[in-house]
Length: 426
Image (cartoon, rainbow, N blue to C red; front, side, top):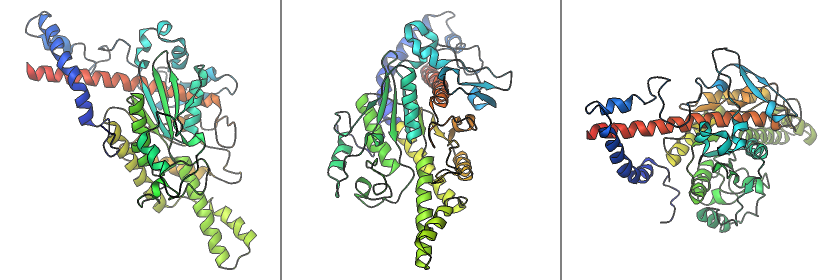
């Protein structure tokens, strides 16, 4: 059956359809094991002793539960090292908070040497909808694993057919974009682990008419050669990201998205162009109008714009949840400080970045990836915008820890639901 981008392939209905065969086999087997275990009557209570929902000593997975609370979300100090990625560590200030284990180092060893304690990494998928920071994160992880990235270009058989045809038939036609706007994969065969990165162009919603979203409508096609359609983030998720995962036969275990960089860039250009046009119309010299237009990008973010952005981000969160279902955690990666506070073109002025991060935290139901906060003041930039591999290594550690939490919670939740079904039957 052809993929319908309007229907989430990981919706609750789809997940129930996929789980039903497993339940038909697993529940009877579980019932059998429960009934042959002594004592005869309290079999459910015997099984429930091993559920991890009301005590840290209870365990159902073959790997240990991650330390709680998540140390990366507790106050701490970032020990940074520009030259040795492995020495980039997060040290919690509270001695009662466990220091995070070196998960990247263990992952590099492979399953046989790492042992069952790392079994949660097997057959997992992390999905990033983001900017070039997210792409660098994917690349940095691949590098420390000794692997190379794979780009899924438009002519790749994996590229979703629906998106291919819409882009091919767009009028006017968009020239072939650079690889930077296409999906990137970091595949770790030893673990059957994959990170899929796909460019999220921001929350721009100016292309709303039929067809514009797949052609030159919206803000970005006229501004960057990196652009590839569609322009709306909702359609990039539904029409490219989700069906590509389906083609890869993968289901997300953790999702992260971030649109801050391109949203601030969109606003910067809009502020500059409007101010310059206003001054030129008033008879101001072109050079002076250009200078004052540049100053306009340093003004505080308006409450009106932040309200629009919060609404758009909330809608993106809703689409991600509808598309990929209720299980995988969805994080928003807040933005870090860059070198463009005092340097032209003032793309990421610190007070604008801070305001946007505050707006992200205020979105109902959102989970924050605090990486941008954790490295603040030690970004170890490799250019005006991008942190180097040291902070990237820290992101890898944070990502793996959150994945460990997510996989363990999901497995325990599934067992809890199955036992609930068994209890109902008994």
